[in-house]
Length: 409
View 1 (cartoon, helix red, strand yellow):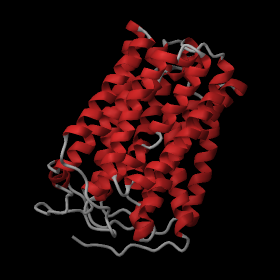
View 2 (cartoon, one colour):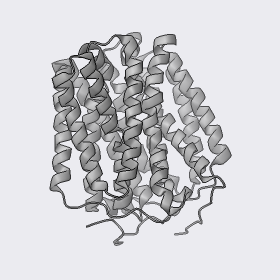
View 3 (cartoon, one colour):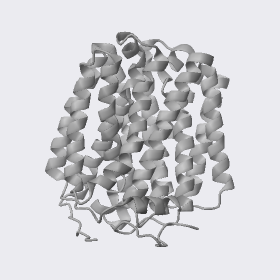
View 4 (cartoon, rainbow, N blue to C red):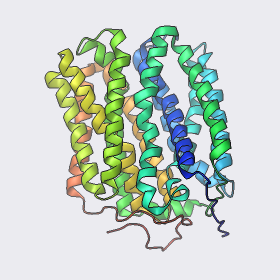
Protein backbone atom coordinates (compact mmCIF):
# COMPACT_ATOMS: atom_id res chain seq x y z
CA UNK A 1 0.00 0.00 0.00
CA UNK A 2 1.39 3.36 -1.01
CA UNK A 3 1.05 6.18 1.51
CA UNK A 4 0.98 9.72 0.17
CA UNK A 5 2.41 12.67 2.04
CA UNK A 6 -0.39 15.03 3.02
CA UNK A 7 -0.46 18.55 1.66
CA UNK A 8 -0.14 21.39 4.17
CA UNK A 9 -2.72 24.17 3.71
CA UNK A 10 -1.29 27.68 3.43
CA UNK A 11 -4.21 28.97 5.49
CA UNK A 12 -5.29 26.03 7.68
CA UNK A 13 -8.11 27.81 9.49
CA UNK A 14 -9.63 28.98 6.20
CA UNK A 15 -9.53 25.34 5.12
CA UNK A 16 -11.22 24.28 8.38
CA UNK A 17 -13.84 26.98 7.82
CA UNK A 18 -14.52 25.69 4.29
CA UNK A 19 -15.02 22.14 5.59
CA UNK A 20 -17.28 23.49 8.33
CA UNK A 21 -19.38 25.25 5.67
CA UNK A 22 -19.60 21.98 3.76
CA UNK A 23 -21.05 20.19 6.80
CA UNK A 24 -23.34 23.17 7.37
CA UNK A 25 -24.62 23.02 3.79
CA UNK A 26 -25.24 19.29 3.67
CA UNK A 27 -26.84 19.08 7.12
CA UNK A 28 -29.03 22.11 6.43
CA UNK A 29 -30.17 20.48 3.18
CA UNK A 30 -30.87 17.21 4.96
CA UNK A 31 -32.79 18.90 7.78
CA UNK A 32 -34.51 21.63 5.73
CA UNK A 33 -37.87 19.80 5.53
CA UNK A 34 -38.08 19.78 9.36
CA UNK A 35 -39.04 23.46 9.47
CA UNK A 36 -41.14 23.20 6.30
CA UNK A 37 -42.83 19.84 6.80
CA UNK A 38 -46.43 21.05 6.97
CA UNK A 39 -46.42 23.31 3.87
CA UNK A 40 -44.45 20.75 1.81
CA UNK A 41 -46.91 18.01 2.81
CA UNK A 42 -49.84 20.21 1.81
CA UNK A 43 -48.27 21.22 -1.52
CA UNK A 44 -47.37 17.62 -2.44
CA UNK A 45 -50.72 16.28 -1.22
CA UNK A 46 -49.48 13.87 1.45
CA UNK A 47 -49.76 13.40 5.22
CA UNK A 48 -47.32 14.94 7.69
CA UNK A 49 -46.17 11.49 8.79
CA UNK A 50 -45.50 10.38 5.21
CA UNK A 51 -43.69 13.64 4.50
CA UNK A 52 -41.26 12.56 7.21
CA UNK A 53 -39.77 10.25 4.55
CA UNK A 54 -37.97 13.35 3.28
CA UNK A 55 -35.85 13.07 6.44
CA UNK A 56 -35.64 9.30 6.88
CA UNK A 57 -34.85 8.37 3.24
CA UNK A 58 -31.66 10.44 2.76
CA UNK A 59 -30.53 9.53 6.26
CA UNK A 60 -30.88 5.81 5.59
CA UNK A 61 -29.07 6.14 2.25
CA UNK A 62 -26.31 8.22 3.89
CA UNK A 63 -25.69 5.30 6.26
CA UNK A 64 -25.18 3.06 3.21
CA UNK A 65 -23.19 5.53 1.14
CA UNK A 66 -20.71 6.61 3.84
CA UNK A 67 -18.65 3.37 3.88
CA UNK A 68 -19.17 2.84 0.14
CA UNK A 69 -17.75 6.28 -0.66
CA UNK A 70 -14.70 5.70 1.57
CA UNK A 71 -14.03 2.28 0.01
CA UNK A 72 -14.70 3.26 -3.62
CA UNK A 73 -12.76 6.54 -3.35
CA UNK A 74 -9.53 4.54 -3.39
CA UNK A 75 -6.65 6.86 -4.31
CA UNK A 76 -8.93 9.73 -5.31
CA UNK A 77 -7.87 13.08 -3.83
CA UNK A 78 -10.25 13.95 -0.99
CA UNK A 79 -10.44 17.58 -2.12
CA UNK A 80 -11.71 16.49 -5.54
CA UNK A 81 -14.21 14.15 -3.89
CA UNK A 82 -15.57 16.86 -1.61
CA UNK A 83 -15.96 19.25 -4.55
CA UNK A 84 -17.80 16.63 -6.62
CA UNK A 85 -20.20 15.92 -3.76
CA UNK A 86 -20.85 19.63 -3.24
CA UNK A 87 -21.71 19.91 -6.95
CA UNK A 88 -24.24 17.08 -6.56
CA UNK A 89 -25.69 18.86 -3.54
CA UNK A 90 -26.37 21.93 -5.67
CA UNK A 91 -28.20 19.76 -8.22
CA UNK A 92 -30.24 18.05 -5.47
CA UNK A 93 -31.42 21.38 -4.06
CA UNK A 94 -32.39 22.69 -7.49
CA UNK A 95 -34.36 19.50 -8.13
CA UNK A 96 -36.19 19.84 -4.81
CA UNK A 97 -37.06 23.48 -5.55
CA UNK A 98 -38.94 22.37 -8.68
CA UNK A 99 -40.39 19.08 -7.35
CA UNK A 100 -44.00 18.65 -8.57
CA UNK A 101 -44.72 15.43 -6.65
CA UNK A 102 -43.60 13.56 -3.56
CA UNK A 103 -41.91 10.97 -5.79
CA UNK A 104 -39.83 13.66 -7.49
CA UNK A 105 -38.93 15.15 -4.12
CA UNK A 106 -37.83 11.79 -2.74
CA UNK A 107 -35.68 11.23 -5.84
CA UNK A 108 -33.78 14.44 -5.05
CA UNK A 109 -33.42 13.27 -1.47
CA UNK A 110 -31.59 10.17 -2.73
CA UNK A 111 -28.88 12.52 -4.02
CA UNK A 112 -28.87 14.28 -0.66
CA UNK A 113 -28.24 10.92 1.01
CA UNK A 114 -25.21 10.32 -1.20
CA UNK A 115 -23.83 13.79 -0.46
CA UNK A 116 -24.53 13.49 3.26
CA UNK A 117 -22.78 10.15 3.63
CA UNK A 118 -19.78 11.13 1.53
CA UNK A 119 -19.18 14.66 2.81
CA UNK A 120 -19.58 13.75 6.46
CA UNK A 121 -17.42 10.61 6.22
CA UNK A 122 -14.56 12.56 4.61
CA UNK A 123 -14.94 15.78 6.61
CA UNK A 124 -15.15 14.05 9.99
CA UNK A 125 -11.49 13.05 9.98
CA UNK A 126 -9.94 16.06 8.24
CA UNK A 127 -9.08 18.07 11.35
CA UNK A 128 -5.96 15.95 11.96
CA UNK A 129 -4.79 16.71 8.40
CA UNK A 130 -5.43 20.45 8.37
CA UNK A 131 -4.11 21.76 11.71
CA UNK A 132 -1.41 21.05 14.29
CA UNK A 133 -2.03 18.32 16.86
CA UNK A 134 -2.69 20.79 19.69
CA UNK A 135 -5.52 22.35 17.67
CA UNK A 136 -7.32 19.15 16.59
CA UNK A 137 -10.00 19.46 19.29
CA UNK A 138 -10.86 23.05 18.31
CA UNK A 139 -10.79 22.25 14.59
CA UNK A 140 -13.10 19.28 15.12
CA UNK A 141 -15.48 21.53 17.07
CA UNK A 142 -15.46 24.03 14.20
CA UNK A 143 -16.06 21.36 11.56
CA UNK A 144 -18.96 19.95 13.53
CA UNK A 145 -19.95 23.48 14.45
CA UNK A 146 -21.31 23.44 10.91
CA UNK A 147 -23.85 20.89 12.12
CA UNK A 148 -24.86 23.08 15.07
CA UNK A 149 -24.90 26.16 12.83
CA UNK A 150 -27.31 24.33 10.55
CA UNK A 151 -29.71 24.46 13.48
CA UNK A 152 -28.86 28.08 14.31
CA UNK A 153 -29.14 29.48 10.80
CA UNK A 154 -30.03 26.75 8.35
CA UNK A 155 -33.26 25.16 9.51
CA UNK A 156 -34.75 28.31 11.10
CA UNK A 157 -33.75 30.49 8.14
CA UNK A 158 -35.25 27.90 5.81
CA UNK A 159 -38.46 28.03 7.83
CA UNK A 160 -38.42 31.84 7.68
CA UNK A 161 -37.84 31.87 3.90
CA UNK A 162 -40.65 29.35 3.57
CA UNK A 163 -42.99 31.58 5.54
CA UNK A 164 -42.10 34.68 3.49
CA UNK A 165 -41.61 33.36 -0.05
CA UNK A 166 -42.67 29.70 -0.05
CA UNK A 167 -40.78 26.49 0.69
CA UNK A 168 -39.40 26.14 -2.87
CA UNK A 169 -37.33 29.29 -2.39
CA UNK A 170 -35.72 27.70 0.69
CA UNK A 171 -34.28 24.89 -1.45
CA UNK A 172 -33.29 27.36 -4.16
CA UNK A 173 -31.38 29.41 -1.60
CA UNK A 174 -29.51 26.28 -0.50
CA UNK A 175 -28.50 25.64 -4.11
CA UNK A 176 -26.93 29.11 -4.26
CA UNK A 177 -25.16 28.61 -0.94
CA UNK A 178 -23.84 25.22 -2.05
CA UNK A 179 -22.36 26.79 -5.17
CA UNK A 180 -20.59 29.43 -3.05
CA UNK A 181 -19.18 26.77 -0.69
CA UNK A 182 -17.92 24.80 -3.69
CA UNK A 183 -16.08 27.89 -4.94
CA UNK A 184 -14.50 28.38 -1.51
CA UNK A 185 -13.29 24.78 -1.45
CA UNK A 186 -11.64 25.23 -4.82
CA UNK A 187 -9.88 28.33 -3.50
CA UNK A 188 -8.59 27.28 -0.04
CA UNK A 189 -8.59 23.49 0.38
CA UNK A 190 -5.19 21.94 -0.47
CA UNK A 191 -4.73 18.67 -2.27
CA UNK A 192 -5.66 15.85 0.09
CA UNK A 193 -4.30 12.60 -1.31
CA UNK A 194 -5.52 9.54 0.60
CA UNK A 195 -3.35 8.26 3.41
CA UNK A 196 -3.99 4.77 2.04
CA UNK A 197 -6.66 2.59 0.49
CA UNK A 198 -9.53 1.33 2.62
CA UNK A 199 -10.99 -2.17 2.36
CA UNK A 200 -13.96 -4.06 3.74
CA UNK A 201 -11.53 -6.07 5.85
CA UNK A 202 -10.48 -2.92 7.70
CA UNK A 203 -14.13 -2.09 8.38
CA UNK A 204 -14.63 -5.58 9.75
CA UNK A 205 -11.58 -5.24 11.97
CA UNK A 206 -12.79 -1.96 13.46
CA UNK A 207 -16.25 -3.42 14.09
CA UNK A 208 -14.52 -5.68 16.62
CA UNK A 209 -13.25 -2.63 18.51
CA UNK A 210 -15.19 -2.55 21.81
CA UNK A 211 -14.89 1.19 22.36
CA UNK A 212 -16.07 1.81 18.80
CA UNK A 213 -18.99 -0.60 19.24
CA UNK A 214 -20.15 1.28 22.31
CA UNK A 215 -19.81 4.61 20.54
CA UNK A 216 -21.87 3.38 17.59
CA UNK A 217 -24.64 2.14 19.89
CA UNK A 218 -24.67 5.44 21.79
CA UNK A 219 -24.84 7.29 18.47
CA UNK A 220 -27.86 5.30 17.35
CA UNK A 221 -29.73 5.67 20.65
CA UNK A 222 -29.15 9.40 21.04
CA UNK A 223 -29.81 10.34 17.41
CA UNK A 224 -32.83 8.08 16.89
CA UNK A 225 -34.38 9.26 20.14
CA UNK A 226 -33.83 12.88 19.14
CA UNK A 227 -35.40 12.55 15.70
CA UNK A 228 -38.44 10.66 16.95
CA UNK A 229 -39.55 14.03 18.30
CA UNK A 230 -37.48 16.66 16.46
CA UNK A 231 -38.63 15.62 12.96
CA UNK A 232 -42.04 16.88 14.04
CA UNK A 233 -40.90 19.88 16.08
CA UNK A 234 -43.10 22.24 14.07
CA UNK A 235 -46.39 20.45 14.88
CA UNK A 236 -45.06 19.93 18.43
CA UNK A 237 -44.58 23.69 18.95
CA UNK A 238 -47.92 24.52 17.33
CA UNK A 239 -49.99 22.04 19.31
CA UNK A 240 -48.41 21.56 22.77
CA UNK A 241 -47.39 25.11 23.85
CA UNK A 242 -49.78 26.50 21.23
CA UNK A 243 -47.39 28.86 19.44
CA UNK A 244 -48.53 30.61 16.26
CA UNK A 245 -46.80 29.55 13.02
CA UNK A 246 -44.90 32.84 12.88
CA UNK A 247 -43.07 31.91 16.08
CA UNK A 248 -41.57 28.67 14.70
CA UNK A 249 -38.65 30.39 12.95
CA UNK A 250 -37.57 32.54 15.93
CA UNK A 251 -37.94 29.61 18.33
CA UNK A 252 -35.75 27.43 16.12
CA UNK A 253 -33.17 30.22 16.03
CA UNK A 254 -33.13 30.10 19.84
CA UNK A 255 -32.82 26.30 19.74
CA UNK A 256 -29.92 26.56 17.32
CA UNK A 257 -28.14 29.27 19.31
CA UNK A 258 -28.28 27.01 22.37
CA UNK A 259 -26.97 24.21 20.15
CA UNK A 260 -23.94 26.28 19.16
CA UNK A 261 -23.15 26.86 22.82
CA UNK A 262 -23.50 23.14 23.49
CA UNK A 263 -21.27 22.29 20.52
CA UNK A 264 -18.32 24.36 21.73
CA UNK A 265 -18.72 23.43 25.40
CA UNK A 266 -18.65 19.76 24.43
CA UNK A 267 -15.78 20.31 22.00
CA UNK A 268 -13.69 21.59 24.89
CA UNK A 269 -14.77 18.95 27.40
CA UNK A 270 -14.90 15.89 25.15
CA UNK A 271 -11.24 16.11 24.16
CA UNK A 272 -10.29 15.57 27.82
CA UNK A 273 -13.16 13.64 29.41
CA UNK A 274 -15.06 12.08 26.55
CA UNK A 275 -17.08 9.49 28.42
CA UNK A 276 -18.27 11.89 31.13
CA UNK A 277 -19.21 14.47 28.48
CA UNK A 278 -21.26 11.99 26.45
CA UNK A 279 -22.97 10.82 29.66
CA UNK A 280 -24.02 14.40 30.43
CA UNK A 281 -25.37 14.81 26.88
CA UNK A 282 -27.47 11.66 27.29
CA UNK A 283 -28.80 12.87 30.63
CA UNK A 284 -29.74 16.21 29.07
CA UNK A 285 -31.63 14.52 26.24
CA UNK A 286 -33.50 12.43 28.81
CA UNK A 287 -34.54 15.60 30.65
CA UNK A 288 -35.87 17.45 27.57
CA UNK A 289 -38.99 15.35 26.75
CA UNK A 290 -39.81 15.25 30.47
CA UNK A 291 -39.75 19.06 30.46
CA UNK A 292 -42.15 19.16 27.50
CA UNK A 293 -44.44 16.67 29.24
CA UNK A 294 -44.40 18.59 32.53
CA UNK A 295 -44.18 22.32 31.71
CA UNK A 296 -44.46 22.33 27.91
CA UNK A 297 -48.14 23.27 27.74
CA UNK A 298 -47.27 26.87 28.61
CA UNK A 299 -45.47 29.01 26.06
CA UNK A 300 -42.70 29.90 28.50
CA UNK A 301 -42.26 26.27 29.50
CA UNK A 302 -42.24 25.13 25.87
CA UNK A 303 -39.62 27.76 24.97
CA UNK A 304 -37.40 26.78 27.91
CA UNK A 305 -37.69 23.09 27.01
CA UNK A 306 -36.69 23.88 23.42
CA UNK A 307 -33.62 25.85 24.56
CA UNK A 308 -32.59 22.96 26.83
CA UNK A 309 -33.05 20.63 23.86
CA UNK A 310 -30.71 22.72 21.72
CA UNK A 311 -28.07 22.91 24.46
CA UNK A 312 -28.09 19.13 24.99
CA UNK A 313 -28.26 18.03 21.37
CA UNK A 314 -25.81 20.66 20.11
CA UNK A 315 -22.89 18.67 21.51
CA UNK A 316 -23.92 15.28 20.13
CA UNK A 317 -22.01 15.46 16.83
CA UNK A 318 -18.67 16.69 18.16
CA UNK A 319 -18.91 14.61 21.34
CA UNK A 320 -19.54 11.33 19.56
CA UNK A 321 -17.06 12.08 16.75
CA UNK A 322 -14.40 12.73 19.39
CA UNK A 323 -15.30 9.34 20.91
CA UNK A 324 -14.79 7.71 17.49
CA UNK A 325 -11.46 9.41 16.84
CA UNK A 326 -10.18 8.30 20.23
CA UNK A 327 -11.53 4.78 19.81
CA UNK A 328 -9.74 4.26 16.46
CA UNK A 329 -6.82 6.72 16.22
CA UNK A 330 -5.15 4.70 13.46
CA UNK A 331 -8.29 4.42 11.33
CA UNK A 332 -10.08 7.75 11.59
CA UNK A 333 -11.65 7.63 8.12
CA UNK A 334 -13.03 4.13 8.73
CA UNK A 335 -14.35 5.13 12.18
CA UNK A 336 -15.84 8.29 10.70
CA UNK A 337 -17.68 6.33 8.00
CA UNK A 338 -19.07 3.88 10.56
CA UNK A 339 -20.11 6.80 12.76
CA UNK A 340 -21.89 8.49 9.86
CA UNK A 341 -23.64 5.21 9.16
CA UNK A 342 -24.85 4.82 12.74
CA UNK A 343 -25.80 8.50 12.96
CA UNK A 344 -27.91 8.37 9.82
CA UNK A 345 -29.51 5.02 10.64
CA UNK A 346 -30.52 6.80 13.83
CA UNK A 347 -31.99 9.72 11.87
CA UNK A 348 -33.84 7.40 9.48
CA UNK A 349 -35.14 5.12 12.24
CA UNK A 350 -36.16 7.99 14.46
CA UNK A 351 -37.92 9.95 11.71
CA UNK A 352 -39.75 6.84 10.44
CA UNK A 353 -40.71 5.57 13.90
CA UNK A 354 -41.73 9.06 14.99
CA UNK A 355 -43.98 9.38 11.93
CA UNK A 356 -45.66 6.06 12.67
CA UNK A 357 -46.21 6.91 16.33
CA UNK A 358 -47.42 10.42 15.48
CA UNK A 359 -50.03 9.19 12.98
CA UNK A 360 -51.31 6.51 15.39
CA UNK A 361 -50.81 7.77 18.96
CA UNK A 362 -49.99 11.49 18.79
CA UNK A 363 -47.20 13.80 19.92
CA UNK A 364 -47.25 12.86 23.61
CA UNK A 365 -46.35 9.26 22.74
CA UNK A 366 -43.43 10.58 20.66
CA UNK A 367 -42.07 12.41 23.70
CA UNK A 368 -42.30 9.32 25.92
CA UNK A 369 -40.54 7.22 23.29
CA UNK A 370 -37.80 9.85 22.96
CA UNK A 371 -37.22 9.71 26.71
CA UNK A 372 -36.95 5.92 26.55
CA UNK A 373 -34.15 6.04 23.97
CA UNK A 374 -32.26 8.65 26.01
CA UNK A 375 -32.66 6.58 29.17
CA UNK A 376 -31.14 3.58 27.37
CA UNK A 377 -28.16 5.73 26.36
CA UNK A 378 -27.66 6.89 29.95
CA UNK A 379 -27.73 3.27 31.11
CA UNK A 380 -25.17 2.31 28.45
CA UNK A 381 -22.83 5.10 29.57
CA UNK A 382 -23.09 4.04 33.21
CA UNK A 383 -22.86 0.29 32.68
CA UNK A 384 -20.05 0.13 30.13
CA UNK A 385 -16.38 0.00 30.94
CA UNK A 386 -14.89 0.21 27.45
CA UNK A 387 -14.22 3.74 26.33
CA UNK A 388 -11.94 5.78 24.09
CA UNK A 389 -8.41 6.68 25.07
CA UNK A 390 -6.58 9.43 23.17
CA UNK A 391 -6.94 11.59 20.11
CA UNK A 392 -4.83 10.75 17.04
CA UNK A 393 -1.68 12.82 16.95
CA UNK A 394 -1.13 12.87 13.20
CA UNK A 395 -2.58 11.60 9.93
CA UNK A 396 -2.21 7.85 9.87
CA UNK A 397 -2.87 5.18 7.30
CA UNK A 398 -5.82 2.89 7.85
CA UNK A 399 -5.16 0.30 10.50
CA UNK A 400 -4.18 -3.17 9.43
CA UNK A 401 -5.78 -6.33 10.76
CA UNK A 402 -4.13 -7.26 14.00
CA UNK A 403 -3.21 -3.70 14.92
CA UNK A 404 -3.71 -2.75 18.58
CA UNK A 405 -4.25 0.97 17.85
CA UNK A 406 -7.97 0.59 18.25
CA UNK A 407 -8.60 2.38 21.52
CA UNK A 408 -9.61 -0.72 23.49
CA UNK A 409 -9.46 -0.54 27.24
